[in-house]
Amino acid sequence: MRDRQLFIADPSMHKFEKHGLKKEPPGPLPHLVISFGEEDEGNLTFRALRHVSQLQIPLKVTVLVGERYPHDVSTLRMMALGRRNTIVQQPPYDLPEIYANADVVLCASGYMPYEIAVIGIPCIILSQSDFEVGLTFPKEQHGFVHLGLGRKVKQSNLLNAIMEPLLHEPLRKRAIERQLSLNLGGGLDTILETIFYLVEHPKRGVGGKTMSDMLN
Image (tube, rainbow, N blue to C red; front, side):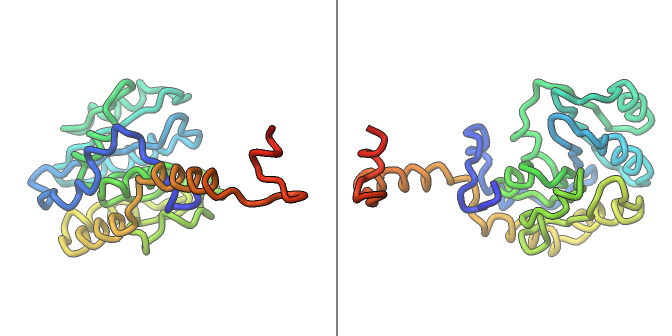
């Protein structure tokens, strides 16, 4: 996944490729999706929802909890009860469709930004670890807002980052265009083409043997 040109999107995402180009500007009830993966070891889901609860604007919030989420889901549900139009969902759920219906996505910096960039949705990144902070893909030049380590993010910075694409249409469009200009999702075709090329034009290895010769 470090080579963005070879990212292979899940087949369920294909029908939503470049969906962001078709989306209208956010309506009177913008939709924020919070999704921090299968485990969310840093419990950024809780931290993000706590901060978002302070937003004094109408906002639909969907919190996606992973299958191996090790923390107390009931705490999230209690927080959700304190804010209108906020729901906490546990698997199974249709992740690509939920992403496609979002106006802003808040996630970690692992594999999820690659999926978002296939669809084209303004996306805010909170990293789970120092390793994730060092990943080069989910950065501004690729259409993301990277706020660094999630456990250190300031509430004001997070809320401002959420509001910007909702209030500024040119910024929203620019983020989508930068993501979609990467043309992610077709890595499978590239890999298959490479395999077929190597089969038809095998490179000589040790002692003049082809890879097929050495395997046999």
